[in-house]
Image (cartoon, rainbow, N blue to C red):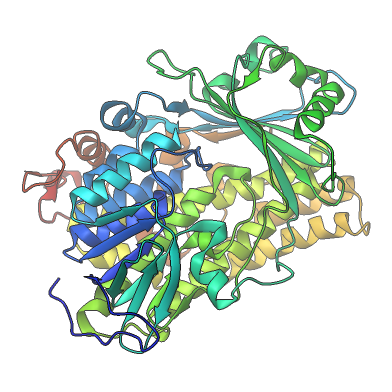
Length: 586
């Protein structure tokens, strides 16, 4: 992009380097933004105080994450994002150290008791033509995307701290600790919890506004046994070891994310994290993390059997409160990406999906602003609304879950709210992606941002948000002692089964069902429902021909080049009934 004349902020030293955009933080969010901008012809500097490779949390993908990666790859011709969106692409292009994810598994543990095999729920993940979801070895994945950004032209500055960000009316200047000053038109902060701009501008809310209040201890381990080998059979659709396993208990939950769960695995590691409700498990000053872990295992004998031979590969890391929030996320010539703006909890693996949702909305807005010169906060108001609403709605989903953990039946009922939210998210993102492939009309992608309630689980329908809020209120009544879990369950069943945004194939009224069916067969039934019975506001997301799914998978799984003009014609044959469009880049 040709440079626009800028004026260095009065407080800043003269720039030694000039770019259009400085991206602070080279994790998965920052590197994705930098790669997309650089591929679009923007001059980008990518700055980080650390160096790759490095450990990061956010290791389990969900459908929303993967489809957003595919959408971004197709729209901006960045095939590296498509590689990260499938387990096959990861194995071929990125790393042999990633695991597969065929299910979300939830096992309910009671203190002092062996696990009762009946007390489980599982959602099998529709593999379909794209293959299963993935467990990401983030050190490898983040390195890969960072390298992609550099290959597309981003200037990398690793291992150097930001001293100050000078914000002016016409330009910004990022002053680095080594004396370099990078002048730019815009600055993107993707530095996470220790956000440079949030700290400099005093954006953190004190106290944090979120209802969820939890802390975490985590590490990577070797020697973790397959849970299928230590517990009695539960009859679940797929082995626990082939997915993301969650041990649930009154007062918290624990993740078990194996990277060693397929025949070609190049890792023997498992990610392990214990998440504790601060209301019942406050920070214990002076108590070693290892002692807390040992006490947890002693109280939960079936979990202890899974970890009988396990050893951490690096010292346990213990956090204070996980949650943080910000009063605003955009300003004149600056923006915070998702994890610099706030965080909730790792439950349901929504963090990376939230990151990509904000990136997907932010990048085209920034490109338009760079083109016409309007880089004001008002230009990015939608991104701020989206960012904040995503956090607020995920907070309700997870706060409700911590309350539901106190009773297995209440958990089963509340988990259907998550199941609905997950399906609605995938429906919207996948539907817009498939229509884009059929038509090559960017308007199909931008449809995601024309709804009235951005950041909700179904932005097109106010009734869907009312349904979610009503379900959350029922759980809050349990939390406040105003109703019992037993009385709450039938109320949740009525609310979930009666909503106009509840696809009938999900059978959400059956809230005590243990298996959440995410199979390809159920997805086909949902597509049929969407074309014939869904509310009119949702029907555009079902307008694609199902033949496009296989064609899209061919594109994604065949995206082997770094970049170039090769194209594959993915237009659906006319007799298949879909509208045709231009050829789609491979």
